[in-house]
Length: 159
Image 1 (cartoon, helix red, strand yellow):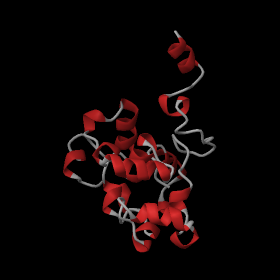
Image 2 (cartoon, one colour; image 1 turned 90 degrees about the vertical axis):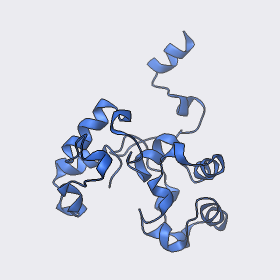
Image 3 (cartoon, one colour; image 1 turned 45 degrees about the vertical axis):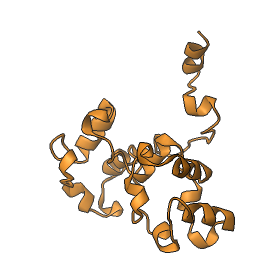
């Protein structure tokens, strides 16, 4: 009964356990982890050390989003130590899988129906998904997308 009441008050496991207490004012399904989108040179040294450890970020990989191999992996593919370091950077499963891998590590049938709908609007299909047949919408620069396309892309943490 307590769990049902917590759910009705919009608590999830992550908010109840205190993993994600960030207020989400943005267009994304989850609050954007702030530390990840700060230039390497502006990060505190202790954060650089964590990022450079098991996550293997270098200054170049950190500053060039999507260039680090670790960002192609889903949360469940990370080791326990990598997950711990990711938490220190402000991530947890939902934010890692959305902002880093954009759910590409998921099988199509592991996506929720709403996520499948979003990816269909971006040009993906169940047959294209496992073959990495990137839709033409991915060839556009952000500012070439319509406002509607940008909103759709925001729903799976593209910006």
